[in-house]
Length: 188
Image (cartoon, rainbow, N blue to C red; front, top):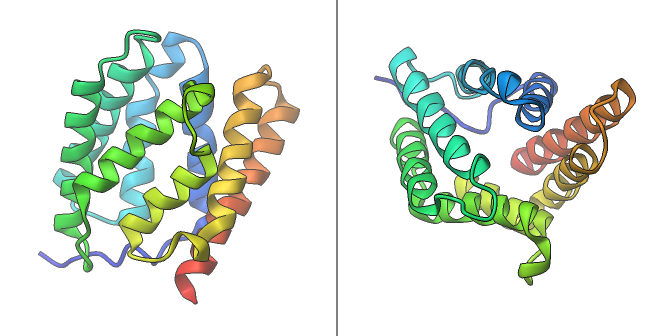
């Protein structure tokens, strides 16, 4: 089985898929169920893994999000982290450049928590997002700074306001800038 180069992706397409996933995450429970097929499509498109690996990743992502999202103030951190470790381990095994998947999982859960409870943390959402992607891609967080900054802005926008067409369009633009900054930082 050939390994995937994680750095080769179409940032515009990934940003559109990311926007759709955030809309589902922020929506009612019935739309939240769209998260699994959306994660599957995003993973398959971005990472180009086998169908089996893609299915596993979407499953782990969905289980982690479900465990975390549905228990506000009583999140199931153990189940969320367990699934995130499996997710990042599968990515690491299937990519050309393996990485510290346990650290990536920890940082992923950390930014979820910072996004939900910013007052309880000293690190910022953008800082932790950059650290997470830097771990996965093996780069310095400073080379992809625009990624975390714009992605955090988009998430905050979707969090604080109704999911109107205008807000979704603004968030989509910020997510495109975020994924473009990541792509550019990885290309340098």
